[in-house]
Length: 271
Image 1 (cartoon, rainbow, N blue to C red):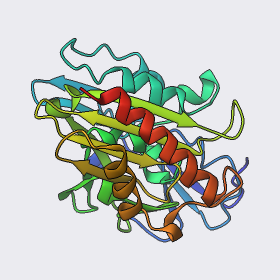
Image 2: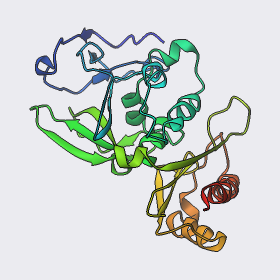
Image 3: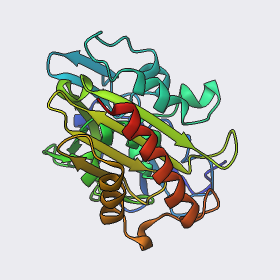
């Protein structure tokens, strides 16, 4: 899609060279959504792909992903064997059904900042206790969990001029047992429900619900829940009015399949 209203593209070499934010600006990383439809309100693009941020860093503390890390970079990442949650990475990457061209351009940060309910990077990072580092125009930083960063369809906690710098996944979350379930209305369709369950060493269970809700929902249990406790927890966390409704699934269908997938996850993680 040609963005005919754009009059300039800025390519700063470092974060310190980022220009002052103004109305009509947009950050450009992969651009896979930005160039997918008309953007008549935009006048300037600020390309952050060339800022030189390392795509990822593995340490004893966990995994840090730059906002500009592509899906291809993430999928190729070789993680420590002790991080048994690692298979979630490939599963969530493949939940974004794009060509190799998309995979090599689409970024983790872009997926979060688009804040679409079916965003698989939202599911991955929310389920693994992801914490966002946000850079303000003056260089100051603040931190939010992914659950607090994504507010609803195409709505995030970013303020004008702020940029998502990175997402940190703690080692403790990466060492949990996990279970993944996804469903869509067609074999290659957008996710209608995407659920991830985690079980830590204390026996605590967490269920992260995405795609079937406007924003990610986390439901925590002190121990493996019974079927009734699971149903009650989902009903309490997701009121009837909060099931998402679009062409990729009606609310009653999303509620139903979420319950079915959640029960499958409960059984898989049961001791």
